Length: 179
Picture 1 (cartoon, one colour):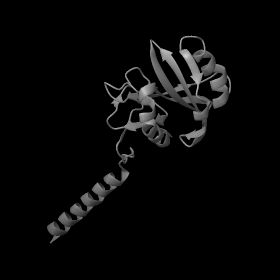
Picture 2 (cartoon, helix red, strand yellow; picture 1 turned 180 degrees about the horizontal axis):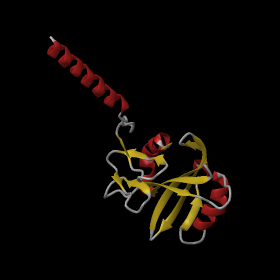
Picture 3 (cartoon, one colour; picture 1 turned 30 degrees about the vertical axis):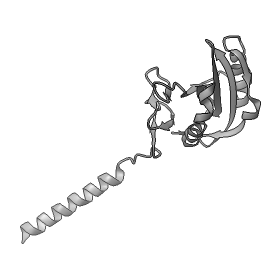
Picture 4 (cartoon, helix red, strand yellow; picture 1 turned 90 degrees about the horizontal axis):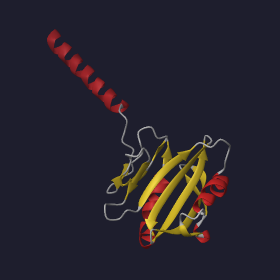
């Protein structure tokens, strides 16, 4: 009788331990149909469609659509020496750099710019076009500030492909989160 009682207690103890292990394990909270392409030490999660090709070898979180469609998304983080807003970062750092002549035919698409959110924080969205090496590109950048860091989510595509990825970009933006 003692052997049966000990076996039952051992089985019960094992069952409790197994349940505890399952309850404590981290659930995979990646949105369905997406993958996380954030670099290991990133302070955010960047989710892109599962079929996209991760591009993190350079130390920047990002991905491209495929080997034939190089439309891509990246997130960069900048720690400025001064306190900035998303708008002042755009006006004082991004815009002058883009207008310096490297990006030919640069222009901002004002009607596509405005307020948005990123990772639950207020953000600014800027859309612009340019020509580089004879190809026309369209870019959407979403800027926000968290803990004095400026976060920039950038989506770049050849102009002919840009509109076809707007739904993916909205999904990427809405699923972005800070850790």
